[in-house]
Length: 220
Image (cartoon, rainbow, N blue to C red; front, side):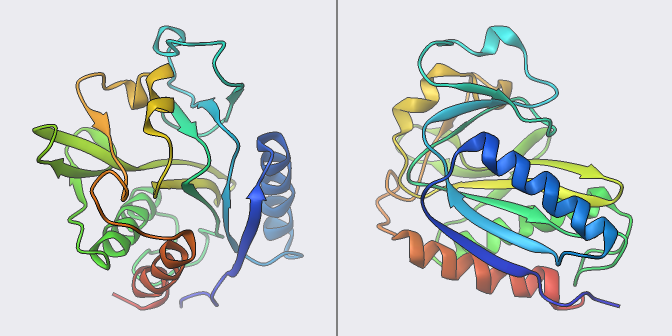
C-alpha cells in the first residue's frame, strides 16, 4: 500500500538552521505518534556549513567564514545558503511510498536520487549517480570533470526519515571553498546557473513536486 501524499511546505526568505532542526525533530515525533502528517519542506538557509556523522575536522578549511552546525545526518561537510533549494523529507518508512518499499533505507536513498535526476531532466540536465560518491553529478564540460549539483544527507529515526537533499539552483559557488564537499577534493560543485540554465526557485519547486509524484506516489 502506498501512503497518501505528504504535505508540501515552502518557506519564504531564509530559515534559521537550529530552528529547522527543532521543527524537524518535532515533526518526526508527531509522525511516529500519529499526530502529524508526513511532510516535504522546501526552504533556503543563510550561508552555513553542516557536519554529518562522517565529517572530518580538517575538511572544514575556513572555520571562521560561516556558522557551523552538527547536523546529525549521515555524510560529511555540506554547505547551505541562498540560491540552494534544500528539501527536508519526513516520511514514515514503515509504509511503502510509490517505488520505495517499507523498511528499506537503501531503496529510500535511491528514491531520493531518482527524484533529483528526474527533476534535473525537466531542464535537460543529465544528472547521474556515481559509484562510491554520494549525491547527483553532472559531467562538466567547462571543468573537464564531474561536478556535484545536488547533495543528499539523511537520517532515519525509528523508521521516520528526516534531513534530505540540497539542489544548487543559483548559490554563490565560492562559498563551497570553505569545506571539502563530501570529502572529495578532486571534484567540484556546480549549479543550474553555472551550467547556463536560468531557473527560478518557483520553477525548481514545481519540477521537484512533479518528479516526486513519479517516484514516491506512483507504484513501480
